[in-house]
Image (cartoon, rainbow, N blue to C red; front, side):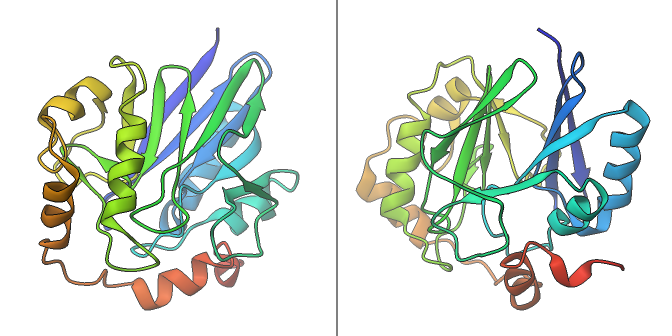
Length: 234
């Protein structure tokens, strides 16, 4: 197997972008790209001679603007992928639970994990799961906008917990400098749902979070509903 994998970080929104590629075929996938780091991502793809096949969004983000459309403008045959439950018409593929994407000899499988927002998806590739804002390292996503539901998120995370314990967890954000976790660690140590926390207690904990709205929500959500098309050419 020849999987190339790089986690890339955008510090303002603490967002992780993930680049995966088959080094034999040079087919590549990027997950949750950010507008302010698109030149970094383009430069890395070109430097490595990679052929971008898929641009995957785990959900419609509220804290940053995606670079999906600018990346597609550069890599014209790349397809934008987002969960079918999201309110958007800009994607080339509206992916559903259980659907798969192939790049080289590697396969990505979509898992519907709504709760943070109604359209959240996680993606499994080998021993890695990219959880978006559903399951964070030692925490979970908020559920107070875009159709969020703590009850639904509990079910989604419990579904992720059925993955092998050794599966590496790669979230869309981390605010404490951590790069990854594992399913086993989160089942045991996650402060919101770990250690066998019951659904009623989880819902109470999530609903008790007192968080300000993301600073860019009123700009980011409309822009991301069109896959960042408004920033083409900037």
